Length: 410
Ligand code: PMP
Image (cartoon, rainbow, N blue to C red; front, side, top):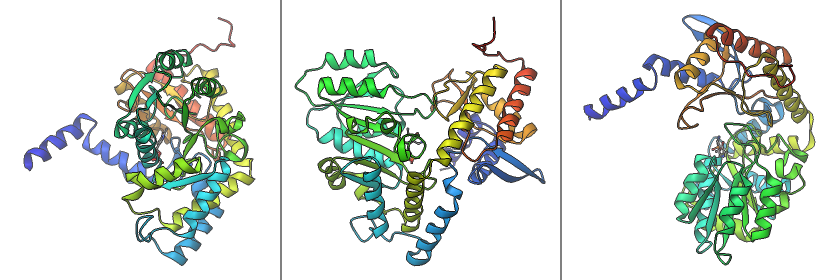
């Protein structure tokens, strides 16, 4: 036993000092208080500006969401009391599934306890039970997609990130009689770039492939009523299954898939991560339902998110701070070195009271390390200016390479 403890503590130390880990955990807990958190460090009470929350629209703090959560909490208590099939289904689960199916224009939807289990549980059934299926999966797809496909046992072909020429090459080389499925995200979680969905749906139609679209970083934020990127392009019906989370734009927790009734029924009937676990607490579901309904009716949060993302892109460009993509609200400052990313993150926190997490392998490939920032709907423009000014100061101090501004004459 001692041997394992020693190995574990050595492993922790390799990933940063034990003290560093404790501080990381403490700040992580405070990050829920978005966009600013108070932290006691070294006996000093400091205000921290949070730049890596996935509560992109601030719905986790929205009065309507909090009121709905409290009301359901008072009425139904803290837990669900069982799995969905054995006593854990409350009318809020049913209402939210109807609301989500309606949001995506699909016949049915099914809730899971997280986006992770939604991908894992639904892909393992959909790809696994579609006999002899070949799955075409983008190389940057999320771990939960990779795990779901592994659990399905289906044959997999990986296409280069967002490369539809490669996708078409792979699909054309596959037996036309075999069932096929294309799996992609819309907004990619680490780079913040957006998949060429119109072209992907054209390829799917041409080759008779079904499509599974992870819109985790888009639902609530993009498209009419927050229905996502595909809906914004008017092609949501080209995607057989749309998958989303309640934990980002909708500010709570949980995940879901929406699609044709027969497929959702199959997932409901066979998905292990749906069947063999306790249901989401009714209070969480009631809060999520309030968030979805609010964001279907209100564009204000989406508008602010878009404006704040644009301002961040513009200021970063003006200061020559390199970032990966300007296609979404996920703004990943490119560092490309593990130690340096940690150092910059540390300097931002200690000197400027800015919390943005360094993202290292395995979340990104070695050499692709980033500071994944997410300007949210609740950031003030003054905070955005402060954030970019802090980066600028660090870039200056460490003598880091500036990105060329395409609008500045060379
Ligand atoms: N899909 C993608 C693309 C993600 O980035 C994530 C989590 N960040 C998930 C699925 C899992 O979602 P959840 O956090 O709700 O488990």
